[in-house]
Image 1 (cartoon, rainbow, N blue to C red):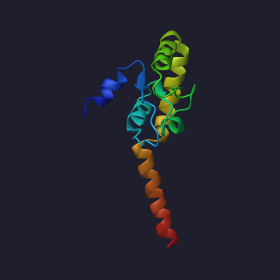
Image 2 (image 1 turned 120 degrees about the vertical axis):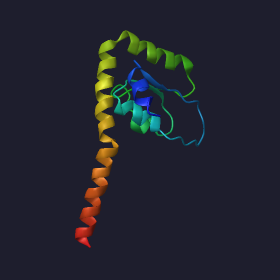
Image 3 (image 1 turned 60 degrees about the vertical axis):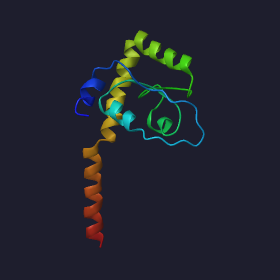
Image 4 (image 1 turned 135 degrees about the horizontal axis):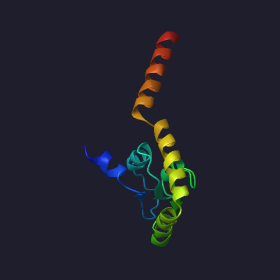
Amino acid sequence: HDKLPQLVASMDVATAPYPAAEDSYFSPLKLYEYLALGRPIVASDIGQTGALIRHGQSGLLVPPGDHQALAAGLLELYRDKNLARKLSRNAAEEGERHSWIRNAKAVLALSKASRRAA
């Protein structure tokens, strides 16, 4: 686990390919890790992925289980370095909004506010 940030940071593009599935829940933790490290992402648009990744802004979304679309997304980022940089920059900004430190500060602020109100 201690090597994960270094491994993810060494990726040119991060992927989260999921198959099509009805009523499935999965933890998008890897997506948060990819965002936190500013990796451009190509992911299946399923479950919580579509709510977290903004297509064309913080990543590319492809239909679940569509291997050709996944390959096309990866190829697009390989060919379009400007798009890859844009997605990387936006992913890092999105990751910052979900950081543990930011979330902890928000919880502490709410806790202080609720104690004052009580």
